[in-house]
Amino acid sequence: MASLAWLLIPLFAAVGAAIWASWAARDRTSGDISELAGYARFREAMAKAEKAHSGSDAL
Image (cartoon, rainbow, N blue to C red):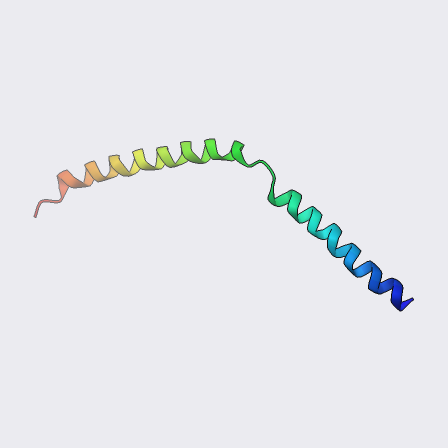
């Protein structure tokens, strides 16, 4: 029974590694477009906020 356990440990490790590798290599390009659009909206909002504050802060 102990020898069976020692044979199953590497088998489970190999299956786990294969699952992790397939998850790590998945195609994630679909999320990039929405993230870039969100970043562009963020930059526009920050530019508007900077313009609004630059006129009111007189030194």
